[in-house]
Image 1 (cartoon, rainbow, N blue to C red):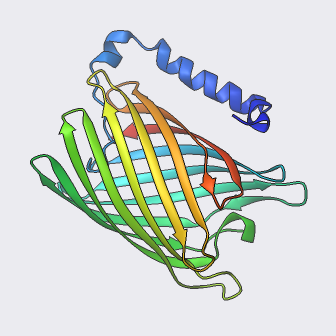
Image 2 (image 1 turned 180 degrees about the vertical axis):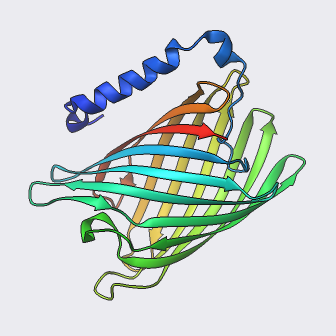
Image 3 (image 1 turned 180 degrees about the horizontal axis):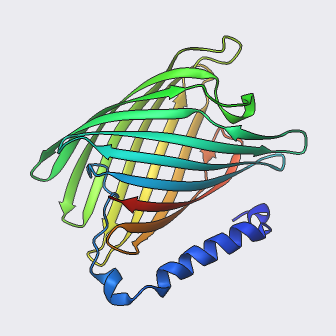
Length: 251
């Protein structure tokens, strides 16, 4: 963890308070809950509140607080909407406001030991400042496959292509390939651990980014869950460290 993260008392307090809240719940209540909403094939209705911080080179940082709403339309189809508020801080620039809004739709086709996922993501350039978004309309197709080794262990392999279709002509066009792999264990007692490996190839700048993240989480009640992530980007990136907290309520 970087020095700037360690010196952030509000972040330390939030992390400690949320983790203590999970530990304070009766053990019996937690032990009876299975982890829901972790596997990409889970088509459920839920709300997520996600805090994320990325430390950058040059003593800069990006923080965001996102509201994400998922709605299962039926057994196979689902949609979600993500509304982020973003704060960018650096020695030369400080901005805060709305980020780029994202809307997604997907179809899940289940098989005996896995599922095929087809989806699409639309991104609107709603950011209130250039530093808080990419300034482009995007239409991003997604395809993925989940294979369950056991009822508690799964592997996800997926691909997203990010492509801009309009927006601010002064901002760079978007054309990126993004393969992704998840490997997770979901305990019958309600906790889980997940590894997330995501590679991004920018076909315009020829830059490559590799995100390596680890997530741990716990069902707090039948409807509520808390998880935390840490990550260390690699290759062509100005990010040095990432951290996030996710609070989830399942309908």
